[in-house]
Length: 353
Ligand code: TYM
Image (cartoon, rainbow, N blue to C red; front, side, top):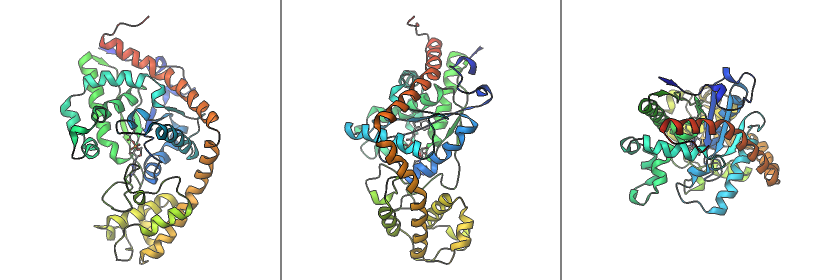
């Protein structure tokens, strides 16, 4: 059996101990302002991985256009997302941060994966069903093959650890199916298995209007989410208006059963204060939601304030931000291109040179 590229062959090392570290990859769509869900469910978990792994993070503009994006808005939101990531603690010197469309390996490998993944597999993707809605015929073909591009994002770095929120689990299982089928079809052991990293009490932050729906940057109601850019008044108003039930908070987690809105708000407070739902309920059990919401709004404003200030500072100098992203793309490309080219060679494509 042909062996795949070893780590040492996949591009210049960015750390001395690189070979001992598994590679982390994750991405986020610039399809709106990052929400508290993105932040607590994903971005915040990306930060510590910079120090323990070779971490590669990407603003996935190719994924964003699987649904309509106004071109000017997309460009603005892409920069804004990059600024939000840096302001949340990603350091372009300690991780690789770049924009997906700047590294061609993603689309090249995605095409190969379009030919590896089976229609039956894609038909099972619940996110496609949710996003396409009732009028499936009108959905873009890009939305349908979205998970193949996501598999390419990860596999073109031979990344093995992928920190995400819970909603991405099915896509990562598919990425493993694709990697395995490629290995099997071409008789190689080239793409490694991927492990999802789904962490924390906020792996699934729910909508403020409906505790059974995830908080999403593309939800038509702005009241359903906290945006990372919301000012103190907006945060306070949205939390005050958040849907709840008439009962006071329970004293223990068992009392959250069947109360999705209460569970969500308790989970958010636990996440931003670095505690657990049990501790939140120990401190606030018995309180009505009016008083609890005040505590929650205050904690959110205190947590988000410094991130917003840093975002503002970064966005005031777009040329500097673009420079950081360009450097990130160069470093990403140095890893991704040789892996993509090796995959192309395995498929039987003639090399250009
Ligand atoms: P996206 O942009 O929808 O979301 C980015 C990250 O935020 C997480 N997330 C949430 N976590 C908790 N609660 C929520 N309400 C919530 N909403 C979003 C998501 O799970 C995700 O981790 N397909 C991906 C982007 C992507 C990607 C990749 C991820 C493209 N290529 C490769 C990992 C690896 C997405 O749409 O994320």
